Amino acid sequence: MTATTYHVSYLGVVFDLDGTLVESRHDFRTMRAAVKSLAEKAGIPPGELHTTMAIPQIMAYTMDRLRQLGLSDGVRYKFEADANRLLDDMELKALPTTKIRAGSVPFLERLSGEGYRLGLLTRSSARFTEQVLHGTGLRPLFRAVRTRSDPGPSKPDPEALLRLLKEMMVPPDRAVYVGDHPLDLECAIAARVDFIGLVHPSPPGPKGAEEELRRRGARVVVRSFEDLRHAITGQA
Image (cartoon, rainbow, N blue to C red; front, side, top):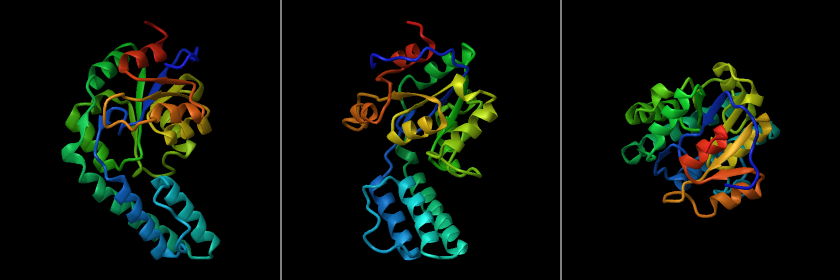
């Protein structure tokens, strides 16, 4: 854990899903390339998008750039719908290899039993999320769930996190968001919600993930559910 910790009596804890509570084998390289191809077919000039960009960045850039290019709302919304359908289908292919992180259920059960309100904010689709949650036994533990498929903005837009907290009836200053990716951190910072990075040391966690979160401003990064509970509760 980093030397800096928070000193807040939390009411709600929001979790990311993939990479945080479960392990999946999404082919993100292929997914990024497919969304990039759709964007170029919609009117984005070749060379403006790169497959090193995260999918939310490709989506946001494309929607804004198509407007700048003077293309109609119909073109923009068709791209968005087509991209989401494509991502939904590609995500479902990872279901057979998706498995729960060891210790997730007892950890969440303990937090819930101690009175914390638990929420889930993910970039995954509703279909993928619900099947994973029900298949792993995690679904009953969450007071509220928000996915990419829900109406309104999605992560990393801070409004997605704020809407989830409102549903949980948790003020932002009494909440913490737990995730493993810089986009999770970006979302929390923009929403003015505390963030704790959870970086599992065993594969398939990306190498250098902890250093990257710290470099981008994460004050607290942990490497186990035990350390995470301490960071949330302040108890050993």
